[in-house]
Image 1 (cartoon, rainbow, N blue to C red):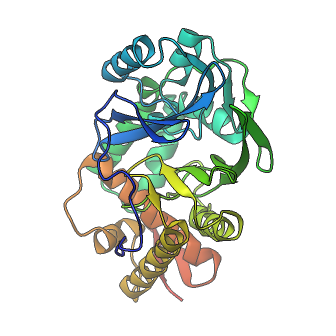
Image 2: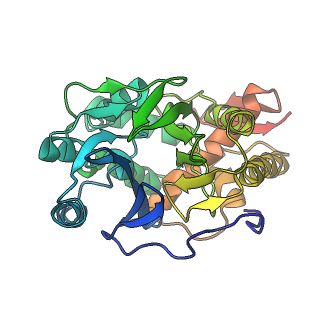
Length: 344
């Protein structure tokens, strides 16, 4: 990724897991650890009259539940959660939503797409689903070992999440939420997730983009088997362009990973440039036809564990599909049933 030298970090270190700190007036920053290569998620608590609105939850595991119990019995004992807002369906964001909603008697607010996507992913262990996913990965060149690891990871989604409430409050782009007397505009963005919710408070110059804009890493943008011809990268780049038009440059950005920062517009431009460079690398690799899986080590030359391989493959597919949609690449299916792509 390009340098983040244009960014300013008001808090140079993150809080210890399970110990919320104030990052802005009326905003508490809670960090929870994750058992993945991306080893943490940021949760934000927004002052809301007698208590705190909770933004995202962490994954469903014993350690995260214990941290939440400590927070509820400690810092939030006198002012408990008032509502629960979940930005998108990934387990580190929605994982404990059902548990926390029941534990604290909270109404859940999500976008419709992210609510339904969570419900869909929790049912991915059906045999027909597994076989369809295997066929997609094989057709694009993945070997049996990585396919097994990716299928097991997808099945594991159910165990990293909890049952959502049967009813929820729908969040839509263009709407607003009043939290503790402050007005937050609702934005949504595609690419990383189909309808990820972001919050903007112009009065306080606060922007909570979830995973859409991160300071140190590029959010994963992937093609998945249920939508093999989708264009999530096109959606993501359109979302970034929209943020430049909509969100002021001077906001404090409170992202779901890495550190809070200032310099939103500079970071958005870096992310857009990063994907331009990735597309150029794909075009150069595909002077002769390649299976998408054969492009992965060209974009990700370091050694990858099974968790990372799934994201690397999905992201490679996103760049391939983006270029196919724009006529910059061509695809053909061979006699072996596998799809190869080449630069147009």
